[in-house]
Amino acid sequence: MASEGRSETTALEFLLQVSEKPYRYGFFQTVRRINCYYKDKPLTGKAFKPSDDPLRFTQEPYTFFAPATLGGLEIEGSSPYPRLSQRFLGLFGPNGPMPLHLTEYARDRSRHHRDHAMTGFADMFHHRAVSLFYSAWAQSQPTVQADRPGEDRFAMYVGSLFGVGLPSLRNADSMHHISKLGFAGHLSSLSRHVSGLVSLVQGYFDVPTRVVEFIAHWMKIPPDETFHLGTGGMNGCLGRDTIIGARVWQRQDKFQVRLGPLSLEKYEEFLPSGKSFQALVSVVRNYVGLEYLWEVNLVLKKEEKPVTCLGKSGALGWTSWLETESQVDHVDDLLLQVENYAH
Image (cartoon, rainbow, N blue to C red):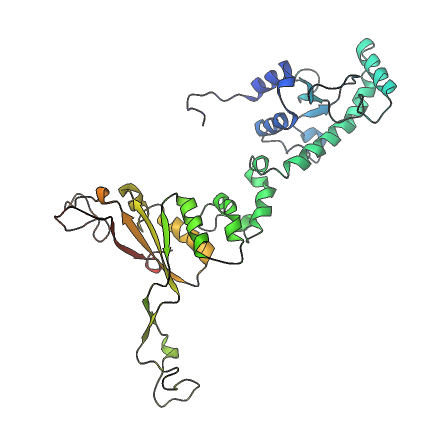
């Protein structure tokens, strides 16, 4: 990571560096950086008019085998745009499609007669061909596409695998959209399993994670689904579908996400008032959906257990304990029922 005191290279400084030693720079790297400097211009190969392009591609007529992909960069002259001379794709040179004597003729007219008509005419085709060549490469590079998030087609491709490809579907919850793309393998999978959920939560928050299945709880029965004596219907068979009461003991549709042991700072972040709680809810719901109930068990490191002081520290029920003996095990008595706090 760059230090805070490091000065950023300006566009002019970078262009001067390339013009002085073009052989030290690669074609893709150079064009990508120029596109980053000229953010008000369309990406190379995407402009509707040549005047909107941030640079011009040219090819000098040469008869030797090119030692590097770039031949030079001009930032002065009649053109307001930098002219980047490349040596790997064009009509001239020993690798070009035209006969070599035409390259020699164009070089002779340009060098000895200052006649750039032939090279200028050919550069119209060079510019378009090289621009499309770069654009085809850039569309398949996720890092290059991320340079301009508003035009990131690679993110659309990956997001479409699990239903968030359109811009209107991005940032719909507290889970960052870029993180969703990073976990596209899990989120696009047709099967949902414990190891996938653990990998997702642990990878997103970088905390020890464990999932406990089959958590027992009382499930309320809707009033219109309860059994009433003397009423008709399909239910009411004793020992089969008759239940006495308004709730039933259930283990099939609830699990527990256990986080920790955590430091006190991390512990407070995952409380309902913390900055990570809603993100945790979004991460789990993106993977599991809304079908299951679940709870969060936060585990605090024993050495991080705070001392409660009335009026100064300690949140009742969350970070306050009335004990005098030293803590032997990690503190794991906090259970958060997500449906009571999630937005």
